[in-house]
Amino acid sequence: MNRVLIANRGEIAARILRACRAAGLEAVAVHSTADRDAPYLSQADRAVCIGPPAAARSYLLADALLAAALGTGCDAVHPGYGFMAENAAFALRCAEHGLTFVGPSPEAIELMGDKIAGRAAAAANHVPVVPGSDASISDMGAARRQAADVGYPLLLKASAGGGGRGMRVVSSPAELEQRLAQAGAEAAAAFSDSRIYMERYFPRVHHVEVQVFGDRHGNHVHLGERDCSAQRRHQKLVEESPSPVLAPALRREICEAAVRLARGVGYENAGTVEFIYDPAEARCYFIEMNTRIQVEHPVTEMVTGTDLVLEQLRVAAGEPLSFTSQSIVHRGHAIEWRINAEDPDRGFLPTPGRLTRWSPPRETPAVRVDTFVHAGQTVTPYYDSMLAKLIVKGDSRTEALERSAAALDAFVVEGVSTTIGFQRAMIEHRDFIEGRVHTRWIEECGDR
Image: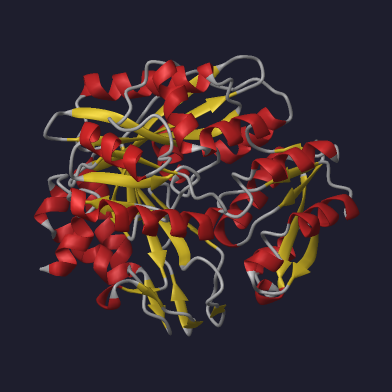
């Protein structure tokens, strides 16, 4: 592997570019016309325009990405996260063109990308799953029977889903038919797959995920867990490692379960096994597996001293993992704050515009800023609203919070509204201090 096409944009493109440099690999960046002035493009060995601003005509266009890779002599493609990262058809086309896909196999992506099949794989590998249906809902008669078994309230979920799309809470039998039609229509529009299944609904749970890694030599390891419970619109806003709510025995249990699942499906490269934690039962349940590097991977890097994107490149090149679960030493506590161009006072609506001032805090061994923007840059409405990730580490969670407060105070952005003020206020909230933030906490705070 000598030259890598970075099939993504923004912060993760800049992050992959740094890893390519560390690995001694050449890097080719792609961009839409909206991203032609992105600062990381000048750091790549080549930059290729792949289309107009709309993602469907640029970053989601497999033909354009493959043409860019083959036309610049690349022998590998790193998809980052989002866009084509979990597209099994794209991974297969890369292989058919002799390109190494930096990620799992197309078969693993397809298996775990189907939430129903993923549930079955988890159960087969003795990973506890949320009580629910084992197949998609075929008709209203089946839906009513399954709902009676699961119990109300229940959650309808798209089998091909993600990001909260194709998801509906059903509080009573009277709501079932309407909610099922809504979920199926949304799933069909978003994923071209209308299959829906159901699970028991837990109203106040924590979202906990385990970072796993596998290689083609049969090695599978975990690098601990992350807590991603602070969310809005089913999208994460703050992530931390380790989780402030898990007892040591339960932490070991889910980490071992995550490795069993990765080994059971023959998983290669970076992946994340996601669970919900129900504090009422003090139990964790598998919900899905993300077959890619995650936005929040830096918190794991900070507490383990690893470079996960560099490890992705090494594993994709056929090398064995450079660490084992036993060799990984977890030190301290890290928190990642997603700095988004959004207005918390208006339901976190995106706020595109021109950055008249961009002054992040100074980076130190305890403070890291992953970004791709600069003062004078225009934040477009075409893509995700994340501008940067602020990752802060301390010897303890208390110290990490104190350093986060100082770093957020020092983070100055003008020209667009951001989440910084909201996140700074979170640090002072007793629920957050005491680890009581659940996945609906931000939503409920807004209702009060």
